[in-house]
Image (cartoon, rainbow, N blue to C red):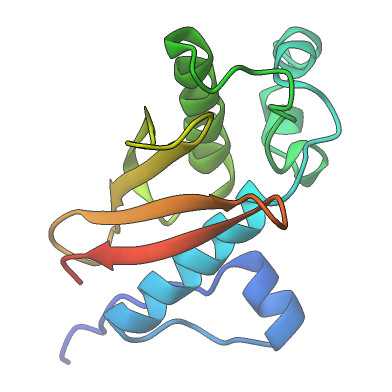
Length: 156
């Protein structure tokens, strides 16, 4: 009997909102992960990152639950500060590692946007378990709507 190809499930929100079945092609998987990342970046966690880390330290399953889904509000951060950019990157990486299990070996880079004041460029890279190579997603904050959008790029 021939081995069955590995099928990666669609993200939780794709399954709930669109009734999506298993993701079959690399392009479908990349698009599904991009949608999940975009949803996560545009969702604010109920607890701030610092409060969450302290309160939930002994409860790792609660920290990774839907109750802690999303990002902290970074409104108090100075995007021109290297320390604040490092903090934002660490928060995004933690959220991706917790809530997007299809993306492995996650790395997040947060850099100032060249030629722009108080704007940052976020690059999320990682690998998918069923694919070779690295995939990268560039997150851009739309100032007029205060929403993040994901630009898809990578080797898939």
